[in-house]
Each structure stands twice: as C-alpha cells, then as structure tokens.
Amino acid sequence: MEAQEKDELKQLWDRLAVTPKLVWDKVDQTERGAIFAYADHYKTFLDRAKTEREAVHEIVRQAQALGFVDLTGKVPGPRGFYNYKGKSLALVVQGKQPLSAGLRLVASHIDSPRLDLKPYPLYEDTDLAFLKTHYYGGIKKYQWLARPLAIHGVVLKADGATVELKVGEDPADPVFTVLDLLPHLARKAQMDKKVTDAFEGEKLNVLVGSLPVGDTETKERFKLHFLKLLEERYGITEEDFISAEVEVVPAGPARDLGWDRSLVGAYGQDDRACAYASLAAILDVQEPEHTCVALFYDKEETGSDGNTSAKACILEEIVELLLERQGENPQGRRRVLLASRAISADVTGGIDPDFPEVHEKRNANRLGYGVGVHKYGGSGGKYSTSDANAEYVAWLRRVFQENGVIWQAGELGKVDEGGGGTIAKYLASHGLEIIDCGTPLLSMHSPFEVASKADLYMTFKAYRAFFGF
Ligand code: MN
Ligand code: MN
Image 1 (cartoon, rainbow, N blue to C red):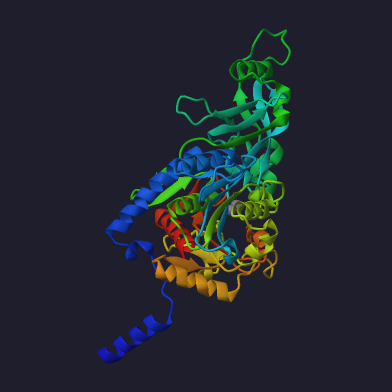
Image 2: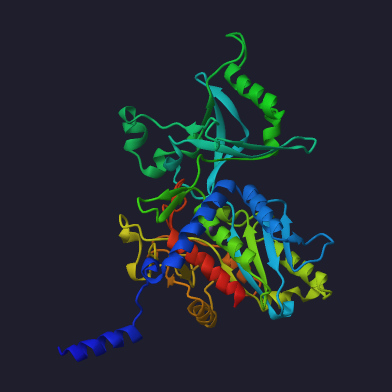
C-alpha cells in the first residue's frame, strides 16, 4: 500500500470510527493537576461521609459555607438547600429562565452497603460480647469478615435526645470485627459449600468485647460490661438500640491506590463518587440558565423504598417550594418536571481483567476512559430501567463535546449475565428526560472500592457542564 493511501485510510478511520480516549493521554499538565487536587478533596469527603446522615451533614456544611440557605425558611436567596429528615437532600441554584423552562437535575444516592444493627443487637457467647447485624444492600458476605470495622450512627432515646456514635475512625479508637473461621477447620463449614451457602447473614456478628464486670456470680457479665461502658459514655441503654440507626462500616480513611497514586481505594464510593461530583459541580455553578438541582437520595441500595428514597415525593415538594418562593402557582410542578433534564448519577462496573467473561468488551466501561454513560440499565431484556431517548443522548453528547468532557458509553455487563438498576426509572416516572452517567468502579459494593482519579474528575466535569449548559 502506498503511503498516501495509508494516510487516507487513517483519516477515514479517524473520521468514521469511535476511538476510546484514555483521559491521561488527553489532558494537559494543568488538568492533570486538577485531577489529583480534586481527588484529595474527594477523599476528605468520603472520610466525613460514611453514612447517609453524615453525607447530608457534610454537604449542608459545605453548601452553607457558600451561602446556601434553607429553602423551607424565610430567608430569600438564589442558592438553597432542602434537608429531608437528615437523610436525603437537595441543593438548588436558581436559574435565569423561569422554572417552566425545566430544571437541570443531577440525582445521586448517599447510602452504601453495610451491616446495620438489629433492634436487640447485644449478646454474649463463650465469654465474648457481640452485636447482631442485618446486612443492608447487596454485599458479598465473606468480604466483611476478618477486617477492622467502625460503628457509625444515631441512637434516639425515648425523650427524643439524639446520641451520635462514631467509633473506629480515629487512630486512637478501638475497632470491631466479624470473625472468620481458621482454614484448618473450615473444610466442611465453608470450603466444600457454594459461596452463597458458606457465609451466612446470621453469622455476621460483630465482636465488641471480652472483658467482664463483677465476678462469676454476675449475670451475663460480658454483655453487662458493654452496656455499662455505653451508659458511662453516651447515657444509653439496651432498649435505646430499638430506636436507632447504627451502621457497621469498614474502618479507616480513603486511600490513594497504586504506586503512581492514580486511583482511589475506599469504602462507599458507590455512590459518593457521583454524590461528591454533583456537590462540587453545583457549588461551582453561578447564575445558570436553568435552575439546577443536585439531589442526594437515601435507600437506593435497598430498592429506593422508604420515605427518604427516590420513590418518595421529595422532588415534587421541592419543585412546589421553588414555585411558591418565586410567586408562582405550585400546581405547575408537573409541567416543570416534564420540561426537566436529568442525570441519574450513579457508579457503574468497570472491566476487571480477571473476570472479562462477565462483560461484553465492546460495550463495557474501562477505568481511565472517563465518565460512563449508560442509555439504559436493567436486566433480562431491558426490564426495570429507563431507556433514555435518543434525542436526549444526542443533546448530552453535545454538552460533553463542547465542554471537553471525556466519556464512554456502555452497558453494565453481558446480556443476561445479571444486571442492576438505578434511580433513573423512578425519576423518569415524572416524565423528565434522564440518563445514567457516573464513575466506573472496580470491586463495586466491596468494603474497598476502586476508582480512577481521571474518571472521578471527568464525572465532576460532566455534571458541571450539564448544569451550565
Ligand atoms: Mn449506586
Ligand atoms: Mn450500589
């Protein structure tokens, strides 16, 4: 082949075919610096927001520092927040256009898989004190054994007083753990079984002590010691755990991962990778065309049921509030929602080179290739998903193109391999345009999820572009 012909074919290829873009190949030194700086702020956020309540607290703190006011209060302002029960939240930046022109919504979730305490968690066995748990969300149970765990949560006393717990994060704190069986004796109890049978939810008991009070005459003295310590430190009793939300999560901070520090390893990146990106994006928005809303939902990991979830009527209420605050008829909320454009901001699974067989490689997301856009999710013939309209996807491509966002399209896994849903379908029930767009992760739903700093930053850049377009 002539050199000229070769050249023409290359040009033809570049013009017609899609070439995936590795973020690191495309960004200049300035943006490379921005990627690493962004990741540092992100890690701090992860450390402060290990539960949905902590996430709401931290997001409100950052928003208030930048002049966001409570939308249910009397103080007017173009930047506001709506805090629903301390577990779901919206940040709003008023646009130049009327609300009837539609909102720009980025909706993420701030709950993550974990172990929740049962109503009567405390017991002792074989002179050890334990807490019983009921796992929350889709976990692989064996991943929670034999690792340091922290206890986060709230305990409500009958008089309404709230006690906040956070033990196991400070290096001076004790940690907790779920025991695992020694391999020497595990053959029948674990090794010969299917993984789903080998690790039982009922055995996810958290070891919390081994020091008794009193003497051999004392009733349940290991359990009693734990209760005594709780009373001394927090003034709570065993019954108070019934009115509590106490979550057992992996102990320790988010970390740089890799010798080159190009990755972040941490618990709870599903979905705080996207929650933080939408926070950083909306905090950065100034006088947008359309009113921008960042929504942070609870209870996504258990199917978006419950009054703090994406299925609850929080969004309708926010739109009515905004209409009222602008002197418009709150009845117009349906029209506002129908005209709105949204991003379902949730993470997706990247290709794990040890398990390529679960992905269809042409349509799977790769770490380092930017934020992942999924037109649809679901499973078994596109069930249980919202399939974004082609017109909307085309519009989003333009948003990204004009703002230098590096992104990749894809699906979660092979057809009929499994699948998963996001909150897209619940928000789609309002008739708004919506598409899934978020950071690809490795080891998703594990106690140590992995993300590329390049993709984390491109997720922020995508949401920022979307808000401003
Ligand atoms: Mn998620
Ligand atoms: Mn998830």
